Length: 159
Ligand code: RB5
Image 1 (cartoon, rainbow, N blue to C red):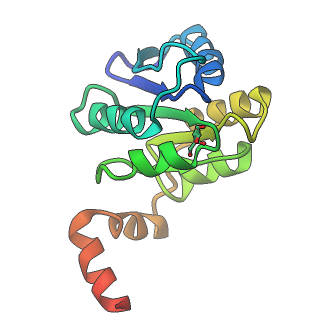
Image 2 (cartoon, helix red, strand yellow; image 1 turned 60 degrees about the vertical axis):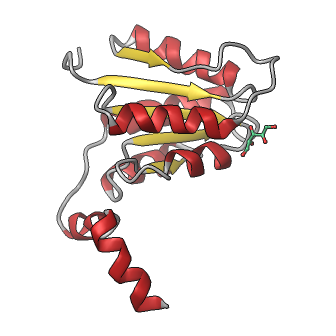
């Protein structure tokens, strides 16, 4: 049973709705607290930036500790989530990318493309994401450079 404060937010657009529902059921069955931020069906066309932003706000505001976002490719909604500096959203395609997103990048949000990978692969990847710890060590400094205060000097250096 995860700690009570560990709330997992989940959000998707219409293309990701069906996979969101599958993953949400898995999370609930595993005893997680889930905050479903929509969308509410797979037939009404909606805009993925709205759902990525809603999830990012929940992470930034502390209402959720981790997150799952789904759209057709996983690309648009991961870009949207990553506009919030406290979010490290990793678009993952399998168990390997999900595991390394945690070990190397300390990702706190995982993104899936429902039109790209199958539900079983996504389910396995999400389990891996949730059970893998950040490796720290040499990765800690690199992840630190992703924070806003460190990003600016990096961008200047490559300009
Ligand atoms: C919606 O048709 C689609 O563009 C969206 O789900 C996503 O793939 C965007 O990146």
